[in-house]
Amino acid sequence: MDLKEKLVSSFLAFEEDIDVHSPVHDIRSEAIKTFETEGFPTKKQEAWKYTSLNTVLKHDYSVFPKQENSIEYKDIKKYFLHDIDTYKIIFIDGKYSSHLSQTTHDGIDVCLMSSALNKPKYKQVIETYFNKVATKDSLTALNTAFSSEGAYIHIPKNKLVDKPIQILHFSTGNEAALMLQPRNLIVADENSEVQIFERHQSLTDNPVLTNSVTEIYTAKRAIVDYYKLQNDNSNASLIDNTFVDQKEQSHCLVHTFSFGGKLTRNNLNFYQNGERIESTMKGITIIGDKQHVDHNTLVHHIEPNCESHQDYKGIFGDSATGVFNGKIVVEKLAQKTNAFQSNNNILLSDKASINTKPQLEIFADDVKCSHGCTIGQLDESAMFYMRSRGIPKKEAKALLMYAFSNNVLSSVRIPEIKTRITKIIANKLGVNIGFDL
Image 1: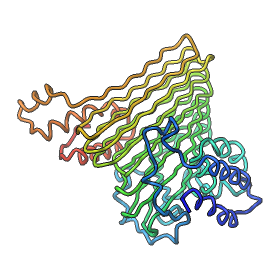
Image 2: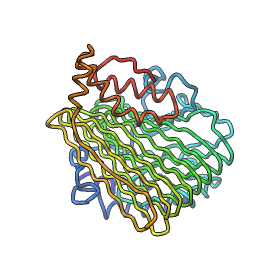
Image 3: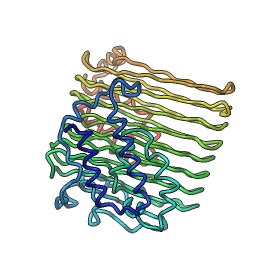
Image 4: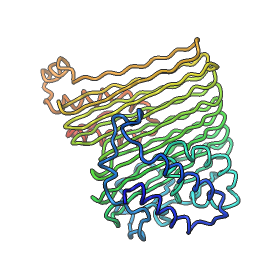
């Protein structure tokens, strides 16, 4: 039995534990049918042309984790943001950990997806949000079918959340191989603002496959500042599906930092449903060995007078592979659109590769749209200049690569995240430099 057949069969057992009167019962049933029909994506599909899941799907994954291990704060404290007070929502092997989380949330509605999916109080959540992307594609459908836990965050009107929210998912290695299906829903009402930090981290060398879905809804003049840190173990793979629905005058920023993991696929989709919207998507990828990171982005400009900004930097060493497939769609009514997309890459090895494909589909005639990509190596003249000033070769290379990625870091609004990312970059580049932030 292959993994697809096992998942479909497992859903029948999973369904027995679900209340048939649950508002999501029919949605789940429809979603598993979609997955059964479409299956896992393959390289025959244009959007997956350069990314194969074959090596990831060969494991016999357990779909239902065993009882969680006894994890203490000291075991995972290094993965938290330390120098700042935050709200914390922690999951261990897909289960909410109450003793590690901080559940007191002043003036904001934070609960578990299991509560939002099954309590009458949150019925509107299901009708308004959960069903929107339930079967958007086969992997989102798979998540919809099996997802039972994650974070539901609702920021009320005019609320400025006083400190960032950390959402951390840990896998412990209880299973020989484990598949997780977390789902997060963030709803920011009119004039609200929130900052969120998300991380998926394996605490084991056993294979882990995480198929995550995050939905973000920003109402009028709302601001959502979202950070994803991907620095997992060599046997952990992540498929991260993020859908952003924006209303007029809202601003959503998503920064993605990809440094670790066997295979990482980021599907990031922005839909602008209103005027004077800003969408910001930025990322830094630094990988080596045989790691694979694929950024697949979409910005859909539907109405006029909106902006989008994409800036992705990649540094690839050893036999690492990078993919960037960025698409901007500008509808006929979306006049006065200002859309920018850039993907710049450095190859440090003859065996490293990058496949990049920026795309524009423009149906309006009064727009400012640009896209471009570069692939190259470090500037030898700059290296010579720095070496002539007494800077060792290793440190000179690190400084050049840091400068290459710095314009993405400069837009990070939480200093503690910028410090954490800078330390990771220095570690990835094998140097010990105190970068002045």
